[in-house]
Length: 320
Image (cartoon, rainbow, N blue to C red; front, side, top):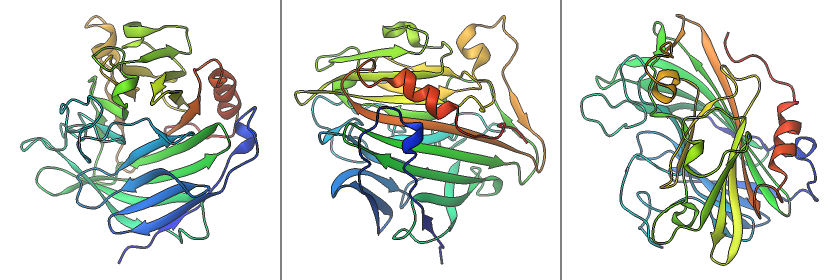
């Protein structure tokens, strides 16, 4: 039997210029936990019959969805049926001791992340807290993690704080230098930068835009554009306590955006030192990211100020 807990923390003090906090609630269903804001859909934590848990779909203020539908739903609005491993918002890396948690469908190298424990009660608390095990293609455990998802919202923004502590429970872990990782988002097709239905734009904390954001380091990145007649966006923020802050971004014009702290050579060229990252046996590494779904563009949503306030909040160094 699973034990589970969902504890809600709104983090209003780390979200500057926020209006009155909204009511966020969760409902446990078969294979998922639905999250609502003032009774309207926000997201769902999908864990049943899937090789890697994810958040899908994700809805911004104004009831505008910012993630694509396929492959967990029917393709709509000009979506392409590509990259079946791009499922909403997910955590996974393409090379962990040679096992691929980015493409879990791989028959020869694909891994699996599955929940072993839920902690707490979703009706009285505000963070999804789960313990998970990481399995190789042979079904043997190679690591475990402790994942926490906290949700908050106000009139013009909704946010998700994603914290994961990966524990080398079964020997050392090597996160390999590859572009295929790590915290990923697949955008609604209207937020793409190119294509027949694309209306999106992208901005990073360093001021880079368009395709120029790919493979570059920045504290945050924001995709925004017109979805069903209203401009909305989704920003991903890297926490200053994370290893190798600020992270590199595997950010594509077709709507993929991923924070990847391990792809040094993959992003910067073969002359760079290889970016493998090793966690010693029984050691751990912790990552924190915040995702902000907002009205308007990055400037009007004050994404830079929001990151600064959130980044100044307490946080332990990433590697132990």
